[in-house]
Length: 154
Image (cartoon, rainbow, N blue to C red; front, side):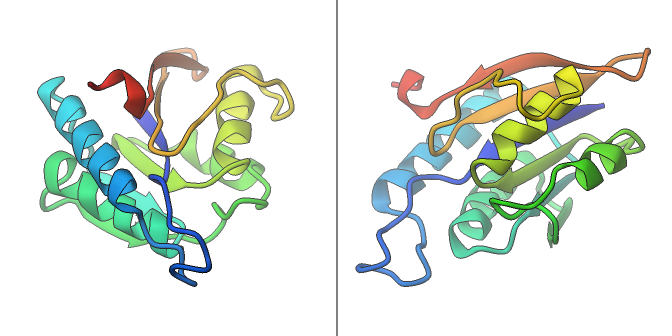
């Protein structure tokens, strides 16, 4: 089972958009990321997002390429400051390849918790639009398979 953790794309400032939707750069970055992942035959059965506008917009752009017809849902428990333990335990039972779209510091802490067992051990540095892929192996542990940042997709 693969778990893709995505930080939402670059967002507008609160002054420009109080809901903080994606900027034009954020939309472009996520569109490019979705196309890149699709070329690598990435497909997920479901995409879950935090419900914040920028995360929902990011998830929708990814769904078009990576989960057409798959589950697309807003979920609780993946907001920026939420504890990661609940999702970490749930993910241990998931059977379907899943993509979570959320925020910092949550995404970084979840990667660390799944791979090392401790959320305060930094493993990756997300930037807006970054994707990390973890895979659960037969032993039940998680390994880091891939990390891609938008700036490498020229």
